[in-house]
Amino acid sequence: NNPTHYWMMRHIYNPLRRRKFSKVFCVGVTFFVSGVVHEYVISGGLGYFSVWAFLCMFLNFPVSLIQVYLRESPKFSWCKNSQLWNVLFWICFCFVGQPIAMLLYFYQYSKVNV
Image: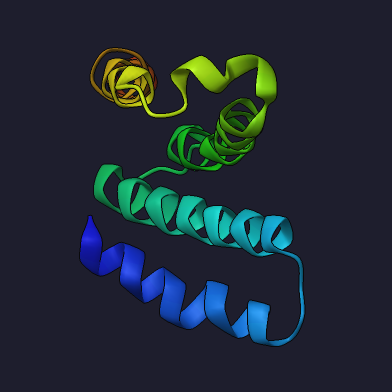
């Protein structure tokens, strides 16, 4: 979501970059803060603390590093401008990431409230 992205860029990523931290470190800190905030919001709504939202958000950090590596690798130059990355994102977003996280929260919520 764009408002969240721009807020994170303005208040976390850009100030760290101005202090001469590496791009990878700044992106990692930004994903970490995003994970903490997502976990806080979901934990508040459910009434108990868990780690699933944090992990789902923070695990995007190594995935993004792998994507950058693959995109810049000469071996994978054939897919540099293809729709493959977009398709992989939507598969992960719609069928892997969020649904699994919701199932984990449902499972934990049902154990806590039974």
